[in-house]
Amino acid sequence: MAPLLFLAAGLIVAFRAGMWNLGGDGQFLLGAVTAAASAPFLVGIMPAWLALFCAFVIATLVAMVWSLVPALLRAYQGVNEIITTLMMTFLGTSLANVLVKLFFRDPGTTVPQTRTLPVEDRLPRLFDTTITSGLLFGVAAIVIVHLVMTRTAFGLKLRIVGANPRAAIHAGLGVPGLTIAVFAISAGLAGLAGAVDIIGVQGNVRADWNPAYGLAVIPAVFLARMNGFAAIGFVFLLSVLSIGGESAARRLGVPNHFTLVLVSIVLIVLALAEYVDHRYNQSRKA
Image 1: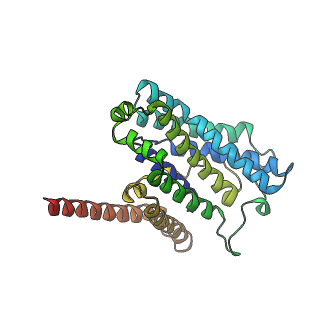
Image 2: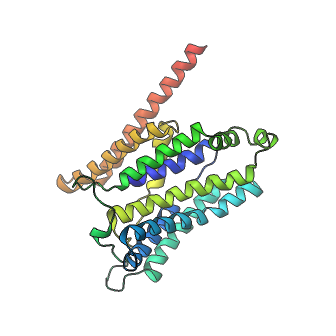
Image 3: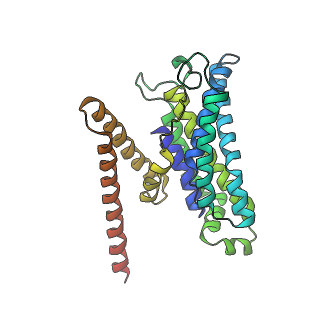
């Protein structure tokens, strides 16, 4: 649930600003790989808490830098960000695999993967459970994003840019700068999602690993109407279905595709309920 919350927070920033950051998976993987490569090294030369903090910062900066190309093309050339972010996703996924197989590979293993961060150096667990404190960070991130986008002048500027860019220009807002800021914040949160997943749970990144969380969380964000508090509930539901499906596949022999079918049915039902509610409200206004 923790990485999905960070990804949802990043998507809320982008969508409320009228921009489509569909490069979350590439940003997620690059953040995960850089965190997996830097954390074990930093733990050996500094206190664990400081090493993890530095790994989070590195993952965030790498993801931000990776978003610069679509951000600059959208801000100064008007290039559709849907195309550029999807292209950067494919490139980011390939680059992450190259980094794992060549530059960050653990020489002590036969399977291409990064060095493993020891369990005792990962994010602390909550109340002696298997839940990491990354969940609290994820909840805090999405709540902060919601409050910033709905209660601050900066969030109002981003919403104005998303609602009507021409009006934003006439109002004297720096649209190119705000566009770059939106992509940087959204990508940085995606990079943090990758870092939280690795430093909190996985411990390393294997070659060709791609959970595709970025695309999976998009329906949940839309069903939540870009509301941070509602998104927490939808992310929880998605997480429960995913984890439950994996457990059923292992213990009961249920095919993995059954989980995808179940999630699809739930999302379709929720989308239909949203449509019916929208039509009902329209008829009442008429």
